[in-house]
Amino acid sequence: MASNASENAARIKLRILLIEDNPSDAELEIAELHRGGFDVLSDIVQTREEIGTCLDRNAYDLVLADYNLPHFRGMEAVDVIREKDLSTPLILVSGALKSVTAVECLKQGATDYVLKDNLTRLSLCVRRALEETRLKQERKRAQDELANKVEELARSNRDLEQFAYVSSHDLQEPLRMVSAYTQLLSERYRGKLDENADKYIGYAVEGAQRMQTLIEDLLAFSRVGRNGVEHKATDCNAAVDAALKNLAVAIQESGVIVTRGKLPSVHADHFQLVQLFQNLIGNAIKFRKGDAPAIKIAAERVNDEWQIAVKDNGIGISPEYQEQIFVIFQRLHTRDEYSGNGVGLAICKKIVEQHGGRIWIESRPGSGSTFLFTLPATIADRTGNGHPHETYAANLVSG
Image 1 (cartoon, rainbow, N blue to C red):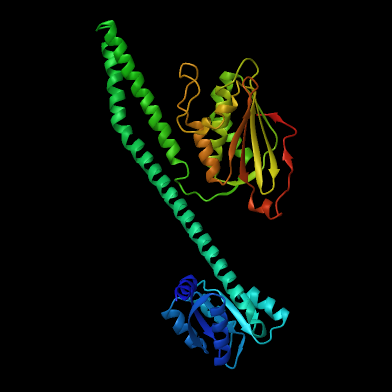
Image 2: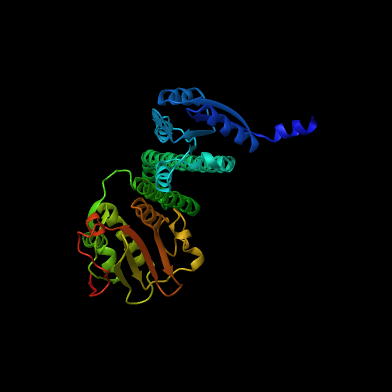
């Protein structure tokens, strides 16, 4: 008695939908599953309507279907299962099934097949089908969880960007008042109070101005990608021209020489591309060293992307800081050494990533830096209807 109780407890409970018109065959299949260690609960049907009704009412672990019934083909059950949006595995059980037909059935969605004169394979096929279904369900749960996490992260990022935008926008007006009145205080009372008062007023004015610059930078960062402009074929040459025009004073004062080859068109937003080049060229100008500062811009086609390089001969950067520089408000130098709030490269990273690319730096201290980023090629280039170019690094001309 104890042995029987232990055996029953070890059995796997299995609820099946059995599509079969021959009661003897149905009994044989259930008996074979019982011998294979299953505790079977079955519903036996013969028509499409009965299949649909049973699938609506009950949750089945498995469907066993005779391949050829008088008024129904077993493979039609696959369509019914799909219509119900179920993942229930289906095993065909047939008296005769040619290899070509069996392969076609597997392609159409059957999990496996067993011939009626070899039912000893049935339990093995059922266990395998149940395991495959379990793995598929686990994989789908993992994918759903990942999709939910991604959506949650995207929503969190949107909320954070919205908060940054609203906060920086709303803070501007009261800060303008603080800045204006501290400057007025400085102008009216400088030299009329003691030396400490002049120093404290100076600190207040400088702090207000620095806060105003920070807020303006934060607002610029949060604005990237908010306009929802559709990306289209955009000429990098025109973007660099606009960036150089915006930086004309800095270029003239620094004496930097900007050289470039013919650059490609990419799938991008023109104004963000201008901002990207302007920030990278401006960064190279800021961190120049010695005489004859130089910047070179080149591009190379890599599969369906363009890899663009902005190279300088400036102070360079140590490897341990080469990821940190793309984080907003991260600075490697004091304000006395170099101006800025550590926002420019963070904006570059945000622009490139919103275009589906990536950005990185190759550099050594004292040997200059090369900022590289990828942007998608135009649709015409990707489909082979554009003008293919391998590289745009030769024939450099003065900018």
